[in-house]
Image (tube, rainbow, N blue to C red; front, side, top):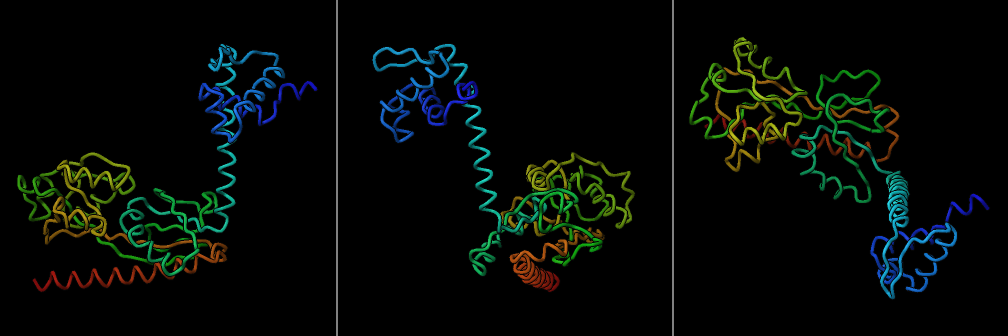
Amino acid sequence: MFLRRFTPSMPLLLAFEAAARHGSFTRAARELCLTQSAVSRHVQELESTLRATLFERSGRQIRLTPEGERYAREIGAALARIRSASMRLYESVDDAGALQVAVAPIFGSKWLMPRLSRFYDRHPGRLVNVHSRIGEVDLALAGMHAYITIGDGHWPMHAAHHLLDVPSVVVASPALLRKHPVQCAADLLRHPLLQVISNAAGWPECLLASGIDPRRAAMGPKFEYTAHLIQAVLGGIGLGLVPEVFVREECEQGGIVIPDVPDLVPNLKRYWLIYTPDAERHPTLPLLRDWLLREAAGDAAQADARAGTARRR
């Protein structure tokens, strides 16, 4: 009996919480699909159980008492947690058959997302949940089935499928280049060089390969996300070094240009799909793997065609 008094039934709590939130038994009844009298009875029963007056009543008007206000805050927070836990459980059951794939944010937004509808066209009913991750991912600990990442193909105890070789290019705003053109690798030293934190070695490696001492460069701001660096380039803050595939839209719109720097040796990013052998048992993984490989091959063929056209010009 003691526990029962301090554990009111859910109908009583829901009626009180809705009435407190709306300041009206009528509106609470409408939300809960009950009659106004039913909500009023539930609240009265709750007050009787707790031996406390929760509402001051004046005709059809109600107002929380100080005790009611305190109780409403705590009950509202508790019900919100219950709803959240229930929703997470509901979604986890619904996602039980989904493939969980981790991907670098910029690769996901600029390369994967614009194409993913083609996967669903081929495989209706399959579900792929895409998670943004930066840096190395422990697939088992992260709850992922697969990861699209940059690397050299050496992942012990993992299956690895090469997707794309993506050269990085120097990118700049047209206004910035009008002030200080970049026609050779040495001209890079006239600009702040913007960096992505996860690719801190990008500029130094590029400069060294091009015969320039990186210590002479003016390293500019660092960004956690490549997308933020691209926005900084659009704003004219400095030069960026990013895979060409991620700035095609900005180049087509004219907000970013890729200067021709003949003596520059660009970085090459190699993207891979990796997963543990156990993950291959998931029925959607082989379908996604094969589709990714086809898409990557098509993208590489288009890149070769563009390069050939540029050489002929």
